[in-house]
Structures are given as structure tokens and as C-alpha cells.
Length: 339
Length: 168
Image (cartoon, rainbow over all chains, first blue to last red; front, side, top):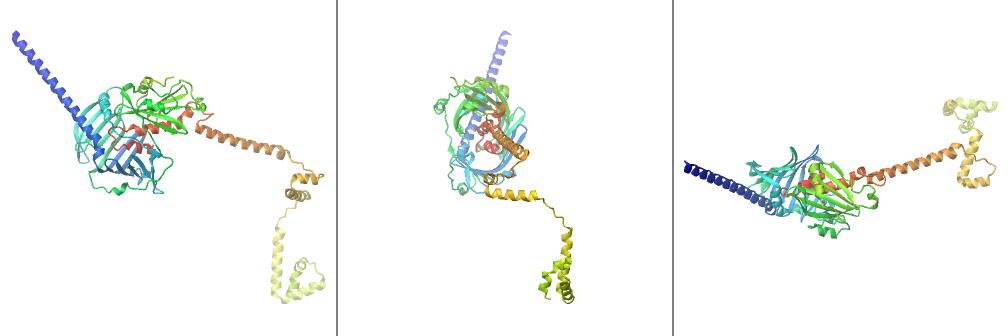
């Protein structure tokens, strides 16, 4: 009897062990699978050409924005798009070439730099961000789905810590192209885009990307800084010292923008998916009168939480899409300007 | 009598201010000349119309004042005052004080309101704290932030946020 019990316990332990190891292996396999797909996603813009019709929906509080456009992408850098909707923007053309984004003036027919500077946005995806993504988010797998006649892997990505945007992503198995994307905050959808139609590696007329570049005095190249120290050297005030703030946001890069002859430092922090921004500038004597030293102001504008304060004549603003209490946590975790 | 002579005296004839010999001559001319008859009729009609028109009679003061003002405008008031010291230049209380004061006040008010408008717009001296901070800086920061907001691994074209920010 005693031996029987011993054998039974042994069998149970062995079975449990096998089950645990199998589940672990399955998980690691899924994780590895997901990582392989993400690497494909990163590689996709470098190698895949396509033509498509894409729709974008974006919500900012009560407001909803809807855009539909035709897109031609020629790897690794060229892109042409034309608005279909909304009507007020229809037929407006945008071309990306050599990392710069140009939009066509409908009256003159000339192309000029979007926002008058380069780059409009740096969308270089760093592999380091994958590490952050796995650290800060958990991935749930769903059943495969067909979008625009292509088979897609479907993932749900949600934060491990505070209430952050949650994402559903449809990734084309063959190319790594993101066919559909939905971003939610709580139960509310905040962003989504999807392909209505798509053709992979079609014949593309390269002439559509050619136009005479107009010399624009206003355009200024935006330099990227990848360390806080290098930014501090180029401004006359101390910048924040924190490379990492609450909820896993890590300093990613910074820019210095000139506005009304004032240098504004923009620091971008990412947790692998979501970004928050810190803006800093030295206030003029006149502007200092508008703020009380150390007083913190919180507001919500266009669906983003903005927290700001003035300290040692330096104005700091934190902007992000999280809830006020979470943004406050981040705000207090910032190692401030120092003396 | 010739038509020319008849026309020359037609107004006096109409008023009955011509002597009898001339009147006889004109009467006999009228009986034979259709065009002068027509001319007389027109003249009568015109007299009738003019009789009904009200003409405002200005007094001497008006004409003297008008003359003085035109003259003074031509030579300048200061010179006129020296040249014609006997003439009175009395201005009413409205013209002398109230009118310039009202004009000055309106001009000042206009200046103040435009200053206030531009100052509030730029969040300057009068705008303090939250209200002044709102518009410009926050708008700029949010626009900059929104460009980077969707610049994550899944925005392969990196453009979604740009398009949305164009609309916003």
C-alpha cells in the first residue's frame, strides 16, 4: 500500500513536471513565434512594395477623424499617397522621398516640405524597443483571420502595469505587413487603420515619386539626440536627468526645436509601444510672470493629459495619453532639472 | 419781327412786362409762327414748374459765414485771424471741447482694445497663468507629441499620426 502511494505520488509529480515544461515550451514557442513575426514587421518596409487603399479612424475625446487614402509604397524609402476622404482633402498628394515628406499645393501644384522641416517623424523602428515591448506588455494570441484576402496572425497586446492603450494587430504571415490595427484605451477605441485593398509587389511607375524640389528657406533639419547629456550641451538650461521614468518608459530620443527664437527641448520616452513627451524651455523674463514657481498645472487637451510646472525659470510639460493619476506618477518619477 | 427777337423777349412777354407796340408785334408774329408758339408754351410750362419749387432763402449771416470760411480755408485761419482781427471766431462749446474730447477718447479706446486683443492672443502682460498658457504652447506641444504618438513598431509608414495631426 505504502509503495503504491509512493509510486502514485511519483507519477503525479512526473506528469505535473511534464505538463509544466510543455506549457513553458509552448509559451516560449509562441513568444519566439511572435518575436519572429515582429522582426518580419520591422523588415517589411525595407523589402516589400505594395499598392493599397487604406482607411484610418482616430478618436480624440468626442471628435472622430476619418481618412481614406490610396498608397503606393516602394521599398525602402519611397511612398506616394493621395487622399480619397475627407472631401476637403481629396486629391491632395503626399510623397515621401529620402526621409522627407512633401505635400502638394493644390493651387500651385508644387511640393513643399510637410511642417516645413525634416523629418516630420522618425519612424525608424529600433530592435531595442522589442525588449521594452516584451517587458511592459503581455501578448495574447487569437485565431488567424483573413483581411483583404490575406491570412493574418492576430495578437492582442496589453500593458502589464498601469492602464495603457491596448492593441489588436493583424500581421500578414507572408510579408509582415500590418494589415489591420486597433488601439483601445479601456473600452474606447482611439485609433485604427486597415487595408481595404492591397497588391503586394505590383509594377510601380517610379515617375510618380519625381518632382522638382523647391528650395524652402523655412525648412530646417531636425537633429536627433540619443542622450540627455548631448542635448544639455546645446541648450542653456539643465534638462531632466531621468533615463527611465515610471511604468517602464525609457528615454528614446530628443530634439531641439526653435520657436519664436526660443529653444524648446522635446524628449521622447517609449515603453516599446506607447510614447510620452517632455517639453522644456527657459522662460523669458516676461513669461516668468505668468507662472508661479513650483505650481503644478494639470489639464486635458485633445485627449492627452498635460502636466506642467516652472522651476528655476525653466518650464517643463509632460504630455501623454494615460489617465491623470498615472501621468502624475510619471511626473513625480522624473528626476527634475537639478540646480 | 424775327424769331430771334421774339425769343429774346419771351420771358418779359410772358410776364406782361413789354410795352404795347412790342406786344402787338409779338402777337402778330405769334399768329404766323408755329415754332415760336411752341416755344412760348414750353416757357409757360417751365414757369409753372419753377413756381412750385421751394427755394430756401439763406440769411445774410449764412452767406457771410460761408464766404469767410471759404476765404479762411484758402489763406489759413491763423493768417485770417491776423488779417481780419475784427471778425469774431467764436466756436461753440461742442466744437471747442466736446468734439475733440470725444474723438480723442474714441481713438484711445480703439488703441486700448487692439492692444488688449493682441496681448491676450499672445498671452502677454495682461494674460496671466492658465488662460494665457493654454492656447499657443499647449497646442504646439500636443502637435509635436501627436507626431510621435503612433510612431511605434506597427505604424510601418509612420504616417498615420501625421495625417491625423493635419486634420486636427
